[in-house]
Length: 178
Image 1 (cartoon, rainbow, N blue to C red):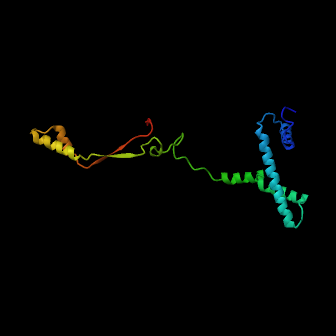
Image 2: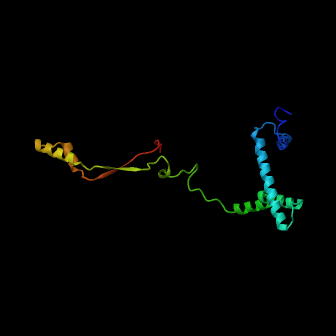
Image 3: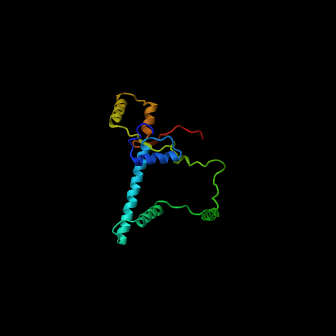
């Protein structure tokens, strides 16, 4: 045996022998410990169940029948067989009798509407166009100061309603060609 294998417990040597007999040559050392833990846990579960069966039968000790029954119940509980092939084929025939729905779109992949994609605008900002009191006072002072002829841009500003909001949308992703 290799270096360090002499001081391994007997169970660890058995696990290594089992791995080698199955053709597993390369594995991490902790694999042996994981198998040992699984093995011990399984044995404890089976023996605990066997003890329960023995007590239920009124026997003072666990015998081989109790252990066999415990193993059988573990196998039945833990592992299940797939249904026979004939049953699966019958289920497939029944399911395939229902035709698939017709495609609504043309050829190619159907895409969701742009409003449902991640690159569409997903929020809006309401920008207030309300004029502040300072801005209103400044324009009044300018008008009083002198210009008898108001500027064209000032006239346009005064024509706008005072408390309007304008929704603004921003795209999250890059623009797509349509």
